[in-house]
Image 1 (cartoon, one colour):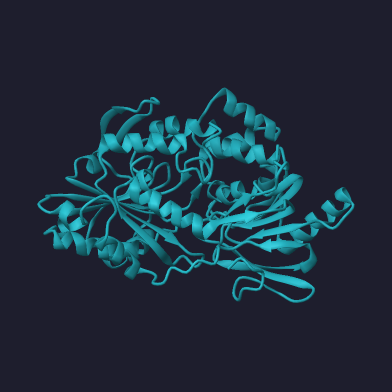
Image 2: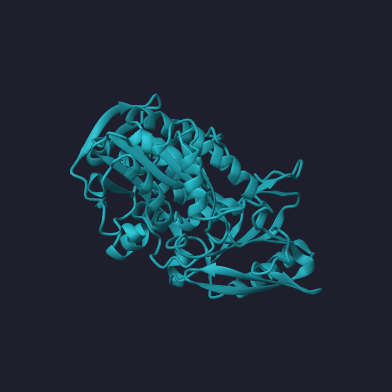
Length: 440
């Protein structure tokens, strides 16, 4: 699946490689000289068999580390199902019916189920978004959507993270979390305990936990990231009875599902994610072209940073990252926006984080650290002046941006630049295998 000629992913002739890159609800076309292309990075060629609801149902019949959900929930008076908001590609509408079938088999009625949207620091969902999230269960379940009545305090983790959980979630007899597992740039992977923390927790707790992102072990692909371990410690204090975590292919189909214990099932899904999206590279790129794959994952620059972070691994020092994403909702988070716009240089943003860790600012600093190594050309729907204020160079099309990047790199290097294309950059993780050639 990572060969250049895959149908629907990009194709090549003797002279060119043609690729379509997602940006919002549309695509932009890119044509490259074939001799310059290292590869068009897609998922590994892994066959999973069935997809969609069938996969979820099979997983629910065979949970990892727990009884079936129907047995966990039997006799309970209230169940809270926690799920992701629209900034995540989780197909809740696919997962919810089989989960509800299990709860019905336990004797749980629809009016005993609360669906909590794991907003973390994100905004509440609109009615149209809730309809899309819930599918056939829209209007049938009570919903918690940023309107909690209060918090329940469980103490603090050994790291000092306060464990405060939305009251309605805390008071449920049974808690079930739905999630998708993908790479996370400092928690290692998403899924599992992240539904509780930060999903239904507080800004203060999220900030305390995320402050560990500066630890060298807090990086994509580490199942034992200190950030992850702190989340799981908090989750044990609260109690999470059952998870349903899925792995999605590049077309956002469910190809794998792990259900059951919130640690063991999540780790199982992580291993499957690595099989699919852990991509070995043996050459660094002068130009990396990266997209999140379009909506909903490129709603704002704050979310687009995830693809940017994966692109930092293969780019050479002094190279260019062409970042493609709509950012239709702007920069996406107030602190992130303020830190970016108030700084005079990228180094100012990094220094700000060293003086003061603040949620939102942490992503600004992550972007700034990349800018200290490489230029970022941004193809988006943001105003040009706003893009420049974020120390990036705006371009109207990906073709224009890449042509400019290759021309500049050709001048700098005195040779033809080497290009890597990552059409689903938030999902595919380049695993660099270039001895003695680590970026600074």
